[in-house]
Length: 361
Image 1: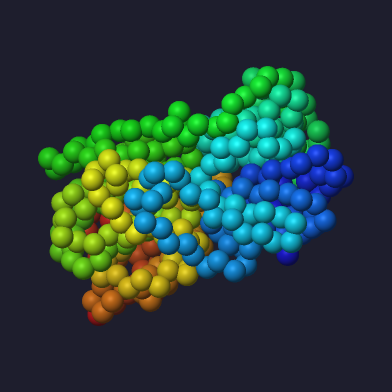
Image 2 (image 1 turned 90 degrees about the horizontal axis):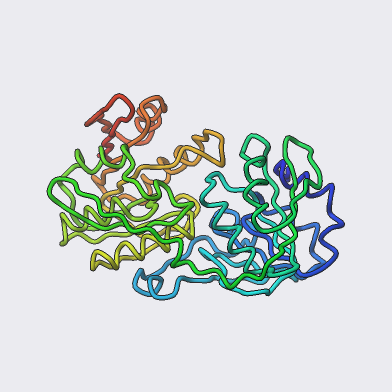
């Protein structure tokens, strides 16, 4: 398997993992760790695709939103000497000497991961960050300086590796400090949404999502899946409008699953939540799917997630099932939808977004 550029840079510095107790946060691929099989390492995954690929035995996870809202969740799988944990956050205090963070896309998400890592390693521990140069590694180094002396260790493959020596004691991570509750209003319905850094559209109602909710197909019945649910904005709104309809939510992100559970509680709702890589491993049949799907992998535009989703959606939908999808107008989705659905309509547009309705015959 070809390693990501970040992992290739770490491969050049493989000796650094021989000392101390390590926690690795959000690795960018499942294969770099194969070179560290002889070491006891904790691997935290906030993204189900890499977790699933790493443990190779878990196709998807199913949760009850009411359980998650109380204390979050941790799903652990031991592979050799490595403990893989799929979770929105780790609350440990001084449990490790070293934390390695793969730089995320959003600066606010990185700030949160830094704070969590500082709690995990404590005074005298080290936080290491690896990321692509064009992904914001320079500004990441500035953020790291608040925790202690920071230096660049190496750079290659258009990536950099930076290390900080933690100079103060830090308490365990408190997720409550990073939660944000916003109340949105659309068509006379008000509903609260809880989000955290790293969750899509954190702290705002995305314009594409607003278009979908404003112009959605009102003929909903049976079971509806909110795919790539983020903080649960779409499904929680529709559940308020159609309380008789059953809703499922799915996302690849542990943070999104956690925030959706909190959003549902705030709206006095409950639902089944799926953690999955796209729709893989989800076996529930549904009458409708609603979504504002991702078209990014990291900082790159990537249609493969949505291409596969469209194909897989036809297998989940019942006869005459529908898919409602909002997307940037420049994306080539009408053709992709037409390849798998017998009826495809553009039901609304703005200068930036198109809303598509696709139906099986």
